[in-house]
Length: 404
Image: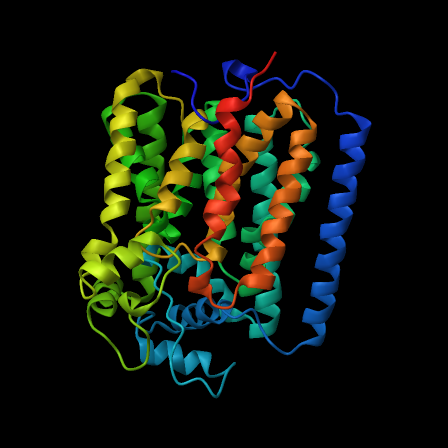
């Protein structure tokens, strides 16, 4: 396979060996950045303990968990609103949970807990998922490096910070992608497939990844095993959702099709993506236009996949597939969806460090500046359209990075 924008490490013929030990100057810079991000996080946590407010989006998962446990329709806007009013009595519009039925078994346990305790545990698990994903990605793309060298990058990244501020679920999706890369790298297809199944939590965010992965059904060996394992995990989760609500699939489709006075329809959200504005100017009432860039990008990735056939390497290609999928997503793309871009950033950071160790510090500082800018210049979620391009901007320098 030719050189692609991201270089994987060459342990077991796939992981890049970082030849030189980390210089002391780089070590001290990374240590300082780690102290900075943990200090700011500690202040935020303290203020969170003193505040009665929950992370804004977590309430939707907690409410759905309660409905699943009660055997009610988890996609009924009126019922979601009823449960959310236990936390926010003044709310008159539900913050709808639109994740598909396989996600429901993940949310059910949270309905057993008081909302505030559940929110803290939820955010703790999301942070743990980001840390575990960072560890796995470093083992794939920089196998001879200490994983904590990349910790300031992972923790100071805008996607990670806003994920925790909103109490979203993207940490699990990132962990799924990292586990997928790790399983493919280590020759453990069942692990890769089960982890990859977590991307079904927000399938619209990774259409390109899903289409390319589905193509693996035409290949034998580990590629097909990984796909079959992923499909089996999704079917098992869907079957578990049916135990609570035997009509869960019709209920989900009905909620997507029929507007409700108790919730905002997906087509009415303003998004921080080019696909939204394409639809807005060409056909405001047609969601199909909104998914056109995503579909075209997915087809381009599929052609790329077909071109390389048996030479295809998932660990090497995954950073590009994820970046293209997110940049062209037909729905979502919110700032709290961006933790999945850590797949691309850690692969990029490993490549930069291999060329010149100080580049890892520069990349980390750049991500800190982007995060800072989101607090200074961001007023609405759809106003964060610039964050993903800014985060991935350093990728433009990859063609100029030459190793000795």
